[in-house]
Length: 161
Image 1 (cartoon, helix red, strand yellow):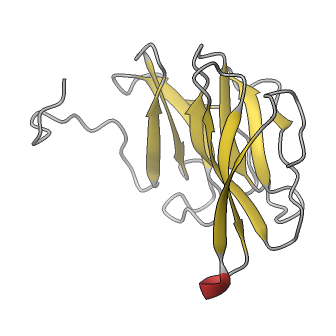
Image 2: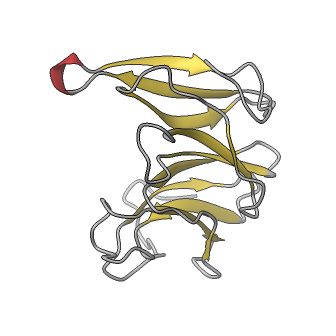
C-alpha cells in the first residue's frame, strides 16, 4: 500500500522521453503506459507516442503499438485480455478514434468512427464486465470545444456512436 507521502517511490522509467498515463492490470502484475521513447525526437511527445506495457517493477518494457502519430491513454479490460486506447494513426481526423487490441499488442481494431472532422474520441474505459467501453468525445476547438460521454453497445470490432 502506498503511503500518503509516497515514501520509497521507485522510478520506473527514465531517459529523455515522456512517459505517462500509467494504468495497472487488474492482477497488479503489469502496467500499461504511453511514451514517446521510440519517436525520432523522444523528448517531444507531439511526434510519436506509443502504448507500452511493463512488469510492475519496471522490467521487461514492451511496445504494443506501432504508431506514426499518437497512441495513448491505455485501459485494461477486467480480465486482462484486451487493452483499449485512443489514437490518430498519424492521419487525424480520418483515423482518430478508440482502438482495441489484445494485451499482447495483436489484433488491432478500431471501435469508433468520428461523425465530424472536429471531433476526437479519447480516454476509453471498460465496464466492470468488460463488455462495453465508455469514452469522451470532444467536438470543436478552443473556447467552443465541448465534451460528452459516450458508451459503446459492445466491445465488438466496430461500432458507430
